[in-house]
Amino acid sequence: MTTLTRLFPLLKQLGLDDQKAQEFIETLEGGLIEHVASKTDLEKVHADLAVKIEAIKADLATKIEASKTDVEKIHADLAVKIEALKADQEKVKADLTTKIETTKADLAVKIEASKADLLRWLFGAWATLFLAILALFLKLP
Image (tube, rainbow, N blue to C red; front, side, top):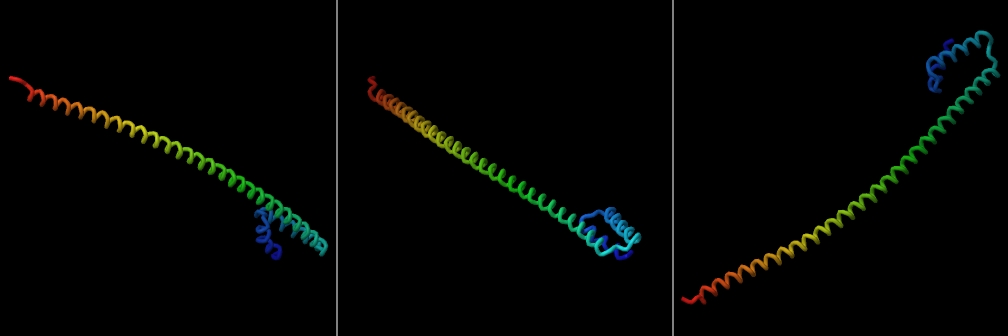
């Protein structure tokens, strides 16, 4: 029956694989050969298919909602992790700023100490030179 084989693409669109679609067509053809299907029989088959289609739609809707929930959960988890990373970044920034300020203060102290040491050395050198010159001028023959 060529009319029934035209159902094959439609059955594939409904989600039946090749084998199940072929079995469905053969079953339908066998039933038509054995007896002529009445309008009531066709309506029953149509209703059964409608029920199966609705069940498939409901199942897909459930899976889609579950996927949406999973995506929302992943998004929320990522948002929490991003906030934690931002907080860690701020903490590291604060720690580095503190270390930089401490290092600056330590260097300033060391520079001042070096200046004082240099001034003492220069004063000592000038004093020694002055005393040496004074000793030369005051040296008596």
